[in-house]
Length: 126
Image (cartoon, rainbow, N blue to C red):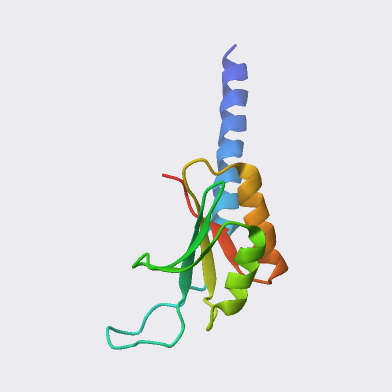
């Protein structure tokens, strides 16, 4: 009976030793390149992020963080035309579903973004 407890403790020690060695070898720090602003006076000619807010019937492209509407439409073709009119193009578009927007509508807007070669990501729903 006593020898079985000793064997169990050895297996537990071996498991903890393997876990600790894995954690020591693994690279756990994320490596993300983020462009940070250089100061209050640094103003560039490009807008870095624009928000695309949409529901089932309408699509709005807004400036971040002011929320000013740059372009609006009701169809995906109008959204494509809006993308072509916006100059200079932002680095990132943030998709924000509103109200009665369906997942299919979100996927359709994402498809338009990818067809135009734009960088679009979905905002976290709060």
